[in-house]
Amino acid sequence: MANHPGAVPRGTKRTYCQRIWRAVAAIPPGQVATYGGIAERVGLPRRARLVGHALRQLPAGSSVPWHRVIRAGGRIAFPPGSDSHREQCRRLAAEGVLVLNGRVDMDRYDWQPSLDELLWKPRD
DNA sequence: CTGATGACTATAG
DNA sequence: CCTATAGCCATCA
Image 1 (cartoon, rainbow, N blue to C red):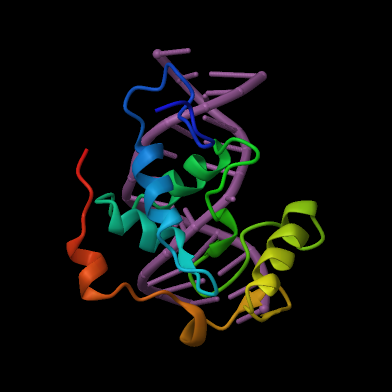
Image 2 (image 1 turned 60 degrees about the horizontal axis):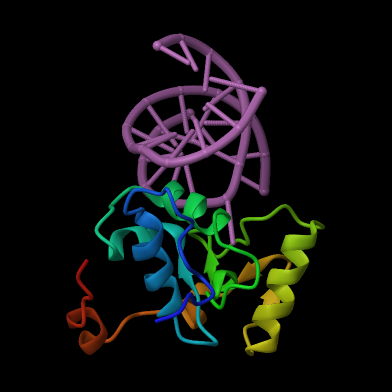
């Protein structure tokens, strides 16, 4: 298999990034997940910050839907007015996710994985 | 090595 | 709504 977009930078020791990126990639379009939720899902409870670090490491042009990851409580993590904040709002809106004042209605859009999805745990 | 920083979160006042 | 605190840990200066 040739290199695909989203390949891990060499030198990283079996980074947690791959696991996190895979979990983020599993978020369905039109829905969102929280940093903490993703962390828990990949077996890293209370490591919400790691998810942020991992997404920061994401190569430009990656197909990983980073915009579907938001803070607990439905807030966009980027400062309002920043380019990233605008881009995230734009991408979410394009998927039908309503973003008001940098906030998302979690009752409506928070992703609750089905039992099937929970059972389908990729191994390392 | 140390200390600050940050795409976090929960709790308390 | 806000600030403060504590827990968390890779990354950077």
